[in-house]
Length: 99
Image 1 (spheres, rainbow, N blue to C red):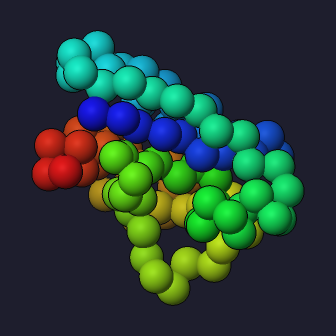
Image 2: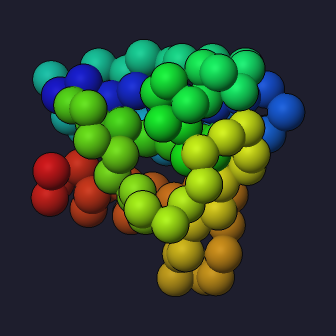
């Protein structure tokens, strides 16, 4: 399973998502993580970047909403505790299992 973490440096939330993905990689032996810095509006448009962090598995954005704008912004996720800058570990685990 190929997991790409798309992010930009001005949004610190990607570090939380990265830590969750690293934890899950220890549970999922065939999971590889790549990190992709998106640092220009042109790059954001090219990769359809819907905000930092974005988690792409085998080419599919696990949490995509077609209404989310493309661009350099922090992304928010609905979690059981309310809005947050990253999906929870449990949400990521479930999304990866469903994929």
